[in-house]
Length: 351
Ligand code: 1HN
Image (cartoon, rainbow, N blue to C red; front, top):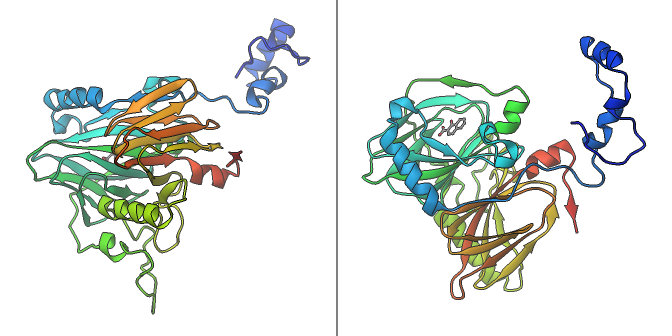
């Protein structure tokens, strides 16, 4: 955390005699003042997160090649991690709290059951016929569906279709790992129970009535079908023609709170030709185009996002999105670190 070269009245490490510095090191002690400005940069945090664009057209061929090169037995999860070079590729972070990966499952394959402390979601990118079993509930995976794998729940993936299936994994692994709380447990294939959380809660405003007891489940809805999310967005746009940001938040239907503890998930519709300037806020954000074609301006970068493309933006950065289609809406899936920032008490909205 050494600050470099800034003119400051604070003493530098080099100002201290070497023998004194050596004594401190031996005692596992460090002077604060040479690092104080780096720990508390003036007015805005230091961010390692760089704006990066992962076009699906370049990602897909190398993911399919992983399918040829590495059988499932050697992978368990066949994933290429979308790693932000600003954080060091080997650290597998897209941002301080988010991990992103593109996972491939080929026909007939299965990814064995396990559970772990990090929270995961899947956003289905391509293919039909796969499903994931989460806590005994069989969740079909169709394009645009959001499927939760919250902390501690058993999950495994299976594929009975005939084409490759690809999905985007978003996990809070970096923050769980940083807290020295990341671990996993391998298990046996789950027994599938009847589970229709996606239907029971799919109609907002109509909830199971807790006459005797609540569902008792911390995560009552595990699958958020894209057909329902898309229909909500279209209805919202029609209902409120003047509404600037046509966006929904994926919530826990019993509490109305974010679906998971650390990361927030949203679906945004851009009207034909719409330009939307997102406000400057503290959390980093990931954008994935479900449908359409979107230009994203992030700092000095202009990304043209085709369908299934993914990009990211650091926190404290304004992002401008523009629907490049004149006659169709575009739909974007967003993931951010808002719930974590709110819990930490550092969530900020500037302007
Ligand atoms: C995981 O459990 C999955 O279940 C995917 O599909 C990616 C990355 C890190 C840790 C656990 C999965 C993961 C993961």
